Length: 229
Image (cartoon, rainbow, N blue to C red):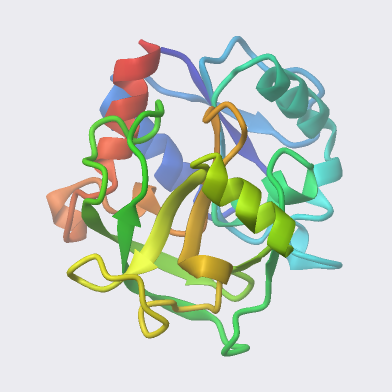
């Protein structure tokens, strides 16, 4: 399996993502600078978290127009799996690969803590090693993580089973109290129409080793390796 991690100015989780991928793949992913216009042969493209371009203008808006994104969009449209984490999710919406937007948290504050997520589907390359309905723990670290879409888009996401994860309680209940940022429908991550593009605000790459206090994120990377190897 070959993977590429896109590095934007302001990325701060690119190395964490590379470490998580290498642990799962057994080989080192390519680190691709945002100013490049070509991508190496890749079975997976990962857009990491961070603050691309310092979140100026709007989170992800400038990064979405980086030269490399033309090739990311082209590869995604031809079926190459793409994972966008946190800022990467924001870039995917700004680039038009996923619907909706990520707005300022309802608290208007930066939030950094562990949250519980309910796995809404597991028939994708990203989630095959999770159980549908399983509750996992992953960290979040964002100020613009409130997912918003109009009613028609939310209906489409629901009807096409494109919601990947929802913020929930320990027992899987989806409640307002479990929603850290005000996201519509407690949405923490969504897929595109094919299930091969995933954007999510929580950070699976930060929980892949017992030394990091948990391994709930590791199954995402091992799921990808199993599906794409």
